[in-house]
Image (cartoon, rainbow, N blue to C red; front, side, top):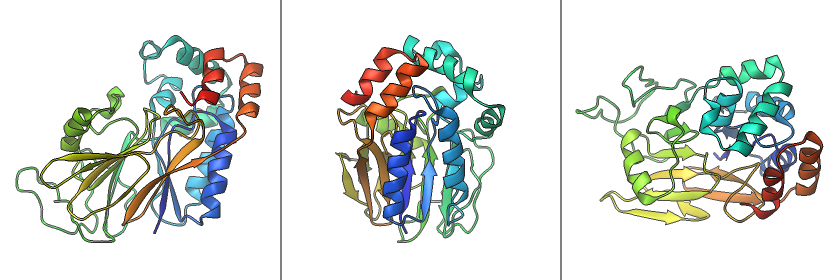
Amino acid sequence: MYYAIIADVHANLEALEAVLKDIKKRKIESILFLGDAVGYGPNPNECIEVLQEIVSESTRTEKVSLMGNHDSAVIGLTDLEYFNPNARTAIEWTKDILTEKNKAFLKNLPLFKSLRGALATKQSYNNIKNKEIATPRIIGARNDKTGLPHSPQSKGFLDIFLVHATPKEPEQWHYLLTKQDAYINFHFFTEKICLIGHSHQPSIIEQLPEGEMVIYKDNAEIKDKHRYIINVGSVGQPRDGNPDAAYALLNEDSIEIKRVSYDILSTQKKMRGAGLPSFLIERLARGR
């Protein structure tokens, strides 16, 4: 089966709707959301409501919505000093217009999840701080040193770690931008595949069994005994020089970054009407 993975919507309703239309056209069975529903853009309430609807309507049990750093900030869990002045202004504006119902939704989002087993589980576990470990229908031997399951390589085995920023200290909102960053973070999850967002820059990092790493831009084959960190890019504010919305398609054999054009001018017009910073408005057309 295919998964569509979306992240960093950032209150950009036009981009979100365009991506969901593309996903629907492909008849994808499950949509996973990696966080940052809000921040930067003009439609935080509408985007949260759409995301709630599409995740709840997933045809599979893998119903995933995670918390991002902007989501965390608007509900008071991340200090605004973490953000640059433009992002801070947008967060403060979002706080003022976000409904209590939608704030409650954000407060209930986890920082990370593991989908692991022959069937997916809604449980998450903290393999960083060695708390609860969710192991429904685990296939494969256990690692003698960690007590965690080895990552099975059989086809059809669901073995995915999902987090907004990084597996290492997810609550600190680190960025994963280099091979060195990837090398460190491969030690902080045991699953075969880790899906992330946060940097708004899509990439596919493959770790070979001997430890060497290869970076792909748009697509890659999922190989036996190889592991992956995949940044799915941003729906609402791409920063890789391409202004088209980004999301990822994943199945047991491959990963592909998809791009979808949307009505940027409409989003920018609404941002101007809301009084959001001009830098945030202009960057949408540049994809930077």
